[in-house]
Image 1 (cartoon, rainbow, N blue to C red):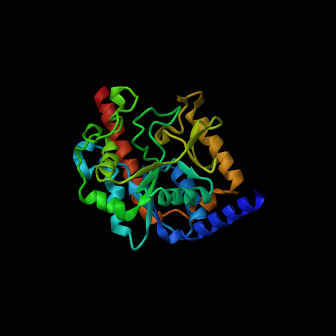
Image 2 (cartoon, rainbow, N blue to C red; image 1 turned 45 degrees about the horizontal axis):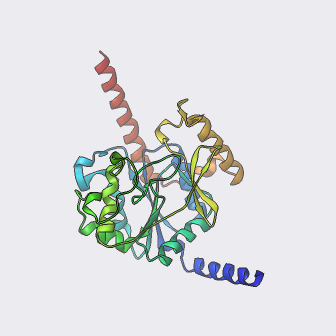
Image 3 (tube, rainbow, N blue to C red; image 1 turned 60 degrees about the vertical axis):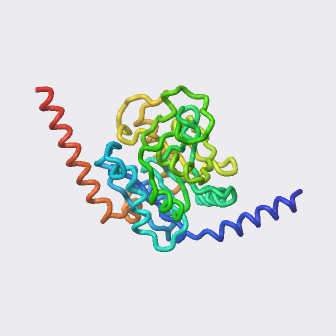
Length: 292
């Protein structure tokens, strides 16, 4: 039995060696929050030679814009910057990797199951109750050729009921719980397989955890824009949750503030930061004027 385990472990290590950092592009939509520094630090730590792309999430959050909605920008960016990479990882700025192996195991699951896309189902407990055939986009990995293929014949109005799939046992209003579900329906309509990543739950942070071989490889914290508030999420204020995770990350990876600057993609980050500040000021002014 031990010899068998050792052989399996050795085989797994050899498999992981087949996926190189340079095979992966990480794409992050961001509003320029402080947590982006931690997220980028961890990606750089575990995947030092992978491309990292930031997407300005401060505008065009209107799905009535169709393919011009900012949510789809990661597809265009992946197509634009790809130079032979095999995989993309779409990862939100409040999703923090904790090891490399879990990401690699996820990509191998993608390959072994002959899938085109993989991530956590949007029906995860206890945070979400969406359509189990869809993923939640805080972490999605996939094959770049499939992504480009789907985008070339993308049907923006495609809905779940257009597919020949069994109706999930969820409230009817949850069938199309997120406007970006059409992304997944296009994959399925084109006969491409979607696999799922197991999830867990960390009570200390009220975070959704991503699992590979029953081991956590990422924490998704939710509600980035409200991280500094006292608003309660489940049973903890957002500020408490985020600062607890910060303390854990600082201790585990010996992170100092100065360490967070070097991995940051400054040329990509500064315009996003300034636009975020300007956008917030405009919104604040509008609110004040409305009150008058």
